[in-house]
Amino acid sequence: MPPEPVEPTHETPVEESAEPQPAEPRRRFPFARRGRTRADVEAALQDVETALHDLESRAREMDARVEARVGRNLPKAILFGLILGLALLFSLIVVKEIFMLFGAALVAFTAYELASALRFAGRDVPRIPLVIAAVGVIVPAFYLGAEGLWWAILAGVAFVSLWRLVEQLIPARRTGAASLGTDLGAGILVLAYVALLGGFAVVMAGQPGGQWWVLAYLIVVISIDTGAYASGLLFGKHPMAPRISPKKTWEGFAGSVVVAIVASVLLALFMIGIEWWVGVLLGLALVGAATLGDLTESLIKRDLGIKDISTWLPGHGGFLDRLDSILPATVVAYVFFVIVA
Image (tube, rainbow, N blue to C red; front, side, top):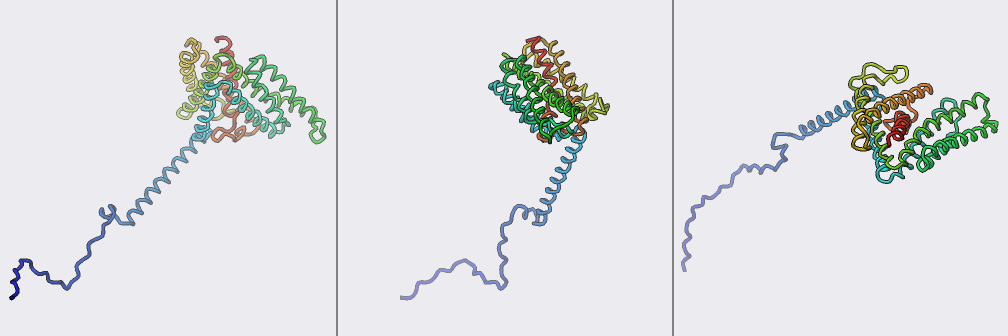
């Protein structure tokens, strides 16, 4: 049979070209589509890194200027201040018996560092007995009140003095009568300054409702320090006591007075339940005691020839550097507590 005819097709035959066709372009990243090369990207990253380094340098310069003006590292001071504040709130609000542990830790570290500073100045002060005596006032102050605090202080003075007198029997530790009297006086100073003044806070905390008074006066004193710090940093031009504390200014003191009155009135009305005018008097008394305590500690450090009592608290110096305004204010708060509450 003859073959069937093949129907013609309309497809045009494709002639093979002698020149090679260009390959399909590869898919590129968005940067490449916008005409950005790898070198451009690296340059942009380098610019970002340089900007971050500049920002970090400016922040360090700012911290250095603030520290040079007010005498502390602000970020570290805020961090450790928050840690201590939270520990204090927990000890007073949750179970106030825990405040005895908080108070014992504070007086122990503070007594030790002050005794160490005195030893650095040449006074032979027995540190471990001082710490034992300082911690020994906490429990009597909490459960027996002011009478228990006074008896514990007297017992502590006798214990530390007897320890130093026994050391006098050792030939290597023997000193003259004048030096011995100075050493005994230094030990009494530590107990009176740290354990006695701080013990009144424990006395208040042990009384019914006293923990709120402790919290209130501590908030006021912290507000005083913050107000003095901020107003002194912004407006401080006239030194208050340049030979004792060059960074303390009258502008800072004025700011602390305003903050103290506002904070005391608010806490008087909404926390401890007393008349607003009593809050005004309490605020004025606390700002006076806090300022006096700050200047007193500065005078002690200047007499000892040191900048900070210790370096245990980054951004704060030592425990006494943070308690200098609180310790004398404790007595003022206790007097108001006895009279009013």
